Image (cartoon, rainbow, N blue to C red; front, side, top):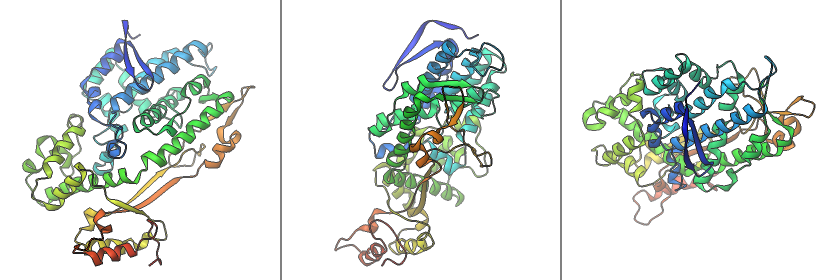
Length: 448
């Protein structure tokens, strides 16, 4: 049993009003250096360049996910406690592993959120497990609870924990992670369409033999959640300007890697803390990884504005001063002709390797369980009055209309200067040629 605090700690939170810390174990985990690092990793990466209020961090999201897990498991303890083995109800002994997994689920996130993973081939879930089970303060705190507790928590993150109720509360199509980040991101971006009735959803949650279900009375609240998620991806997470900033960030970090390959002095270019990140064929250790945060990279990018390499200097300046690449929509028909656009950009004096990009934004708002899928999703089940289960889209026409339908936005990014039309523009004819390939912000083969 975890030692209860004599007086619970309460953190004020703009989303859930209060975060209640009742266990010494949870407080000790929050106070570890690894968890405090999350204050220096922004939740939405470069999105703040578009939605200026979106400067919230992974720390707030993590304690928010913990609070939702605490409330739900408290509710299960009170109303759905297992009476006999195999009855499919909730075992209160699972509460601690659930709330700790919720608290720590993002502790392995790198700087600039998912952008870091794309460029440096890391996986935040794998790094989270390594932090939980490795030589860290978090691991030592978890072991103080029980020697096997780190492995239990890590298995929840890995989705291999034997109790699917616990796994689905942390990772499914409707879990504490998604519920918190949708509400939190909507609040800080000002995007009201990300809001939904979380209290109603939590009141209709039920533990069952297959995991977590939802009482039929909560169907409309679940529908609202799915539509909110759909809208947030289209309007916030897929925003072309933030993606244009992300492209610049990826290219400038890619340029650093290339300069090091060409023989530039690592001490002059990246310094000792960033050197392991850019070292070829080097797997970051947990301790090296934990030194990385947004502040470290922003300081480096600030310095790179004065680096003698023109491409790195220019990209760094564009990033810090919010000069995003512009974009046009492309599709399967136009994709084979992208070389033509890249050539025109090159004719204007820009290296297309660093000044153009094809970027696809993809999301599947909801899908049912497909056992043959590469990554099968846990479907959302509704529980009827007679105790039987029905998959959500069987009863919801709204969800059925978007089930399995991916939101895909394919774009080609390029420097804003390509749209210039000034009389003194040295490349005015080249820019005119570029604009002639575009119609209504879309590149369509045959449209000239």
